[in-house]
Image (cartoon, rainbow, N blue to C red; front, side, top):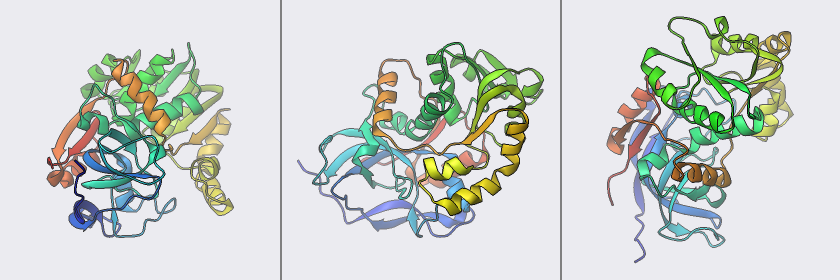
Length: 344
């Protein structure tokens, strides 16, 4: 039976850039899918640091959203309608996706998702677990495979290994045959070891550059002083990739499709980091991951084969999304935070 789609839906809406009070639950029109989109009844949505950074206005330099806007960047749910040109999916399919960066919209009862950004969700997990995968899983895969080009025998450092991206990155790097070092607090040490980390540096007691050197690559998830120290730990010719530092010119052209003005702006903003990298003979790269249904299908295959564990820190009902966001922003989650929707 075809589901009747309501005219209005409940969503978490950003009304202005600023503090937590600028995003609230509200009723908004249910989106209508374009010819290449799916309309998905959202069953669960994952939270990521990019969500509160967008709310605060930290990313206005990269993308300024037309407000009010429905927030949220990743989801899992059921297809309830398909655009006229959709070929891979049909009504009733269970999918997961990292939604389009320029649109957001995952924190809602329904979301319009580009067909090419969706994949069949892993058959072995529930909606909440599937919703924790897309953004963090894609980020880890694309950095390690495409930017660091990790191969067997490489020595890789992943800073902040107990967080959402880190828990995926440790496992994927190990699957590529790397020896993995990571930084974690005593609270996260057991988790990162369980996921396969060979070396764990307790950042509350010592700095990673006191014990690590000659690394084949660094994946930085922390930024700041931790990123600056990473350049001294990588061997000459190696690459340091960050998702927490400052965007550089390649970010504008390769990741975001932006023009010369943004390339120049990012050149200036990242100048001190790139100069420090050059001083150590290494390359600096900031990555914005891209949505990819094809990459999600690969992650789903690994999950179903028992080769990739999804670490969920906590699950909140959608009505408590503000509390979930507060936990995320506090920075103490181990793995991912997810909100689940009430049953239809």
